[in-house]
Image (cartoon, rainbow, N blue to C red):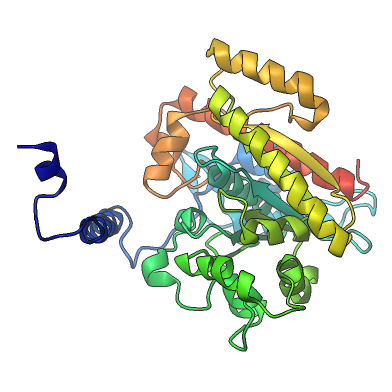
Length: 398
């Protein structure tokens, strides 16, 4: 069989016909696979946490937490694993409230922002796909919610991978005007942002889902009427709910379109994920130059205050890979403290959890080799803890 015949088995079909058929067939098979892995009526839930994990998220010692549980000072849900008590997220929040009710004014267990502390909006960006941008965002927002922050996650990527990790199937669960596009569009069909925010299975974490309709913003923006500036639309849409959250984290699409630019203009901080390989770093260099040029042009029209912080996060890091270590050293020599101290490891635990639309905070530990899981979770916690420290520093906290 000739190459031409293999590529085009139906001589009457055009390549556009074949491309369209392949897209439909692939989408159908992927949906079937997703239904088997995660049926439409299935509900995601966050796993119960061990006493060590619960104590870490609350900010107390494990021994003190056990004492609280034994004293019965707060009602706790029943739960045990291997004879040891486990805690739901609701239990953890109830313990925080109890501790704060009797704590000194200088010691608070709830990390929520106080009067005078502004809303933090973190845009997570990268020009190139495959940099673990969505994985980073998903683990960060879950970590912050587990720590007691009020968090809004915005899926700004039309591919909607973040939404999928939160148990939403874009094809069936997200309708017209139910993404951020509904709140930032230019016509009279625009909706209030409160109409598109959804609760998740994790208390304290809300989400605005993604969907292919987000691409409409890329096509309608060039045709917008004079005065309908794209770069202020996200900040304006979030205004009505600014007091309801401590942190907003935006998972941006892997390109430098209008969606990414409006997220950058709304942000108070920027996190740039980078895979430490030469091609990825070369791509990032182009991305940084383009971003600088575009933001400079926008700021001439609408001056914007500087970011509170920006950081580069090494992702999919393999400590035993010599070229990666050399690249990380190169990046650290260039960026200094802007390159986060901790890196997110490349791990089969993270990859395997993703196959069932889960994160390390969702998945049951028993599914993995203990060492593999613990190493992956430690790297995620260290990264998230470092980002949390940047947030707290912005608010003037120690």
